[in-house]
Image 1 (cartoon, one colour):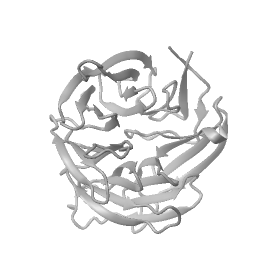
Image 2 (cartoon, one colour):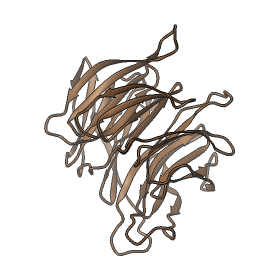
Image 3 (cartoon, one colour):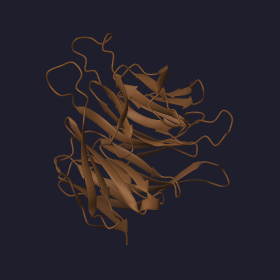
Image 4 (cartoon, rainbow, N blue to C red):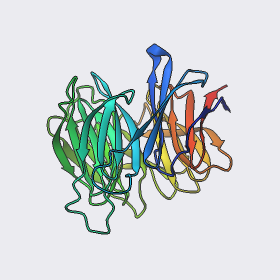
Length: 334
């Protein structure tokens, strides 16, 4: 059972973008950072456990050539083995900052040379894998950046060609040194999922075909792919084979965000139907099949939800953003 806690006020509101909430937990400092996109800016907030806002900062997309300021598509903290970077994507490029947003350490401009005059150019979908940061693009390419232990000497090391439509989301999990293990999955506007193994060179292991609807959000946990679709379904796949194990008609409208609490295997799904659901994932000890249990449903009344994240690894608390909502809603277990 969850209850509504003190909300965190925003200076602006949240844009109607999928996955429009990023969370960075700092247990050593007893702080949580939140990031929300609004038009050409991203709002960064720090809050104490009881929800008291302690600091706010606004970041803007690097303008480059053009008259109008570019719109930001996503903000996300990437936790690497040796540092944490804040990554911001827009219609012009990719910006990487130190974790507090104080210093920009890298800028990558998007090349629109192969885009048609009517095609939107943007980056979207951000995840860290080992010492790499992977970012999706409008063309379906995934850009892989090699991140040094410190300093700004970031290089574009590889481009992955698995998709033909715009990338929507990327999910990773630590490989823990296992051979031939899946540790990254990418999703696109056609619903196609590409399953990868990271390394000095990334390897495409399998493709999971779409079925005519976008896949706005995807997660990866212990060899299980959780994918949320535009028709409100959550589908659970075996990562190594791409086999569909479970299909859940979870929501009445398009899913806008998924998140996982890795310690407990809890899956959060949020959608445009105003509902946030929490599910418990596990594997049967006898058969090894994926099992799922519904744990909680929460109606965020009269709100078009656009982002939702756990903000503790056990899944005992989560936060929600909504379109045109000037606060971050917080919920915790009773």
